[in-house]
Length: 122
Image 1 (cartoon, rainbow, N blue to C red):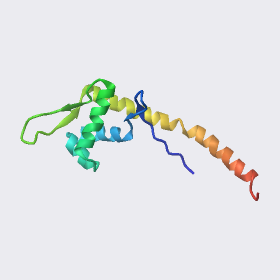
Image 2: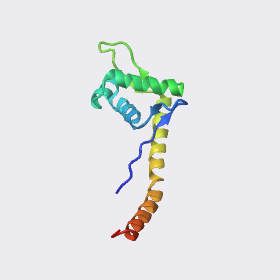
Image 3: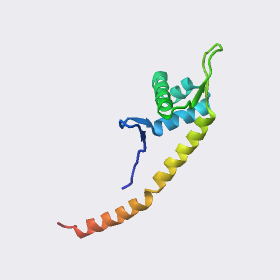
Image 4: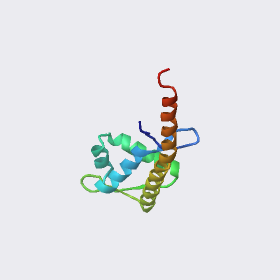
């Protein structure tokens, strides 16, 4: 038995705006240098990726991606200084929050196994 968790930031209506998918997208934008390339590498549409970023920026009230316009491809993006800091902060938060679940899960697993042993053969 193991534990799986999903962490999200939600708005006042309970709508998700930040989670592992957005985290991965921002990491890909940083490594690929383009929102379009990041979306393609994750096998999601550009419009979905754009919507994810737009929703995040609307909720945070500050840009996380610097979109470059012009040039032959009209393509290119990088994380803003805020975006880089936010990505690092959220990644650390997520890692720490998940790590903190290990101890209570271990306690649960021991108690659960004891419960099973008590009820064997019933």
